[in-house]
Length: 315
Image (cartoon, rainbow, N blue to C red; front, top):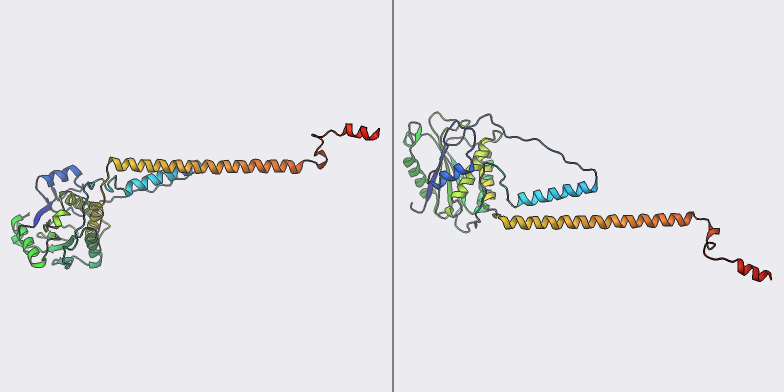
């Protein structure tokens, strides 16, 4: 099928625990290569501590609010990638519309999928955001796909093209396939990952999108708390959110800074108004208290001298 674009995933070393960095991924994709083999489950955990920030004055509260606003705006705008090993999206994409004739979401001929709803949820999320329907395929071990410990690329790709022609009548599907190797297991997964996409799907799943997909796949694979289904589901859901987000640039960041500055000025202005109001109310209260505490007989004596008038009446 000429309109179908295909590439593959390959891990450089099946025992390597560290995820590929951004530059390595870009170099591989630009060179026309792909990725073979996923990482293995190891006792590797990514965690972090929690932090608490408190304040004891209004000024500190204002400062904390400013920091929170800035952080929320920056991260919601996608200025920074949410993972150091996941490339940042720099392309604005328009979701496909009316291209896909919906089909099943996966085919498991190995018997590893135990929670289909968990798997499908992420695939559906990907479809809703991109218009591309993913199709996860688990291919059991067969000697025709392997030359010893090496995948037979030609045979594997021919099989994926056959699957695409038989199952899909459009160019908007994206096959994500796992080829099981000899003596493979769900906990190790020593096989090979490959993908094949339709011509229309390629407008969304370009080289950058594939790099992002692989980055999230690596991140989720090394999270040993995730099941196989959840790992794949999260990968597609997070990828869709990233590749369909609007890219940001220097001007966007400048606009964000201006918005933050305006917010700061407004907060300071309101604070000063409230402070001045409280000050005037306090002065008014002190003056009122001073007047009420003053003896009644003293009123008028300080300003009116009646001695001359009394002498006149005495005469």
